[in-house]
Image (cartoon, rainbow, N blue to C red; front, side, top):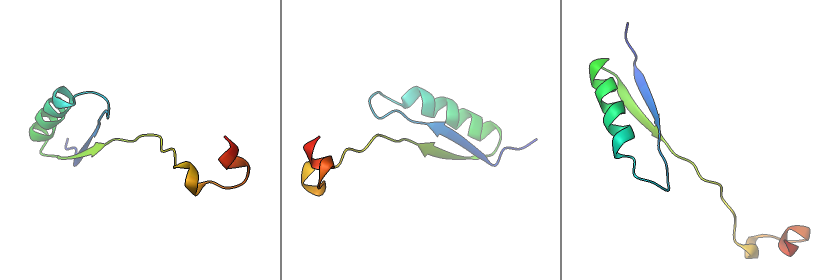
Length: 56
């Protein structure tokens, strides 16, 4: 059985060394590539908002 890709969720607010270590070992074992995914909520600056959005 092969896994062509290992996806690892990365945190923006904490170190990711342990997650990447485990993902790397799994990818090596199964001859897979690694994809790292991280996301954060985006709050645009107020000068981009207009109307009711600018009032908060």
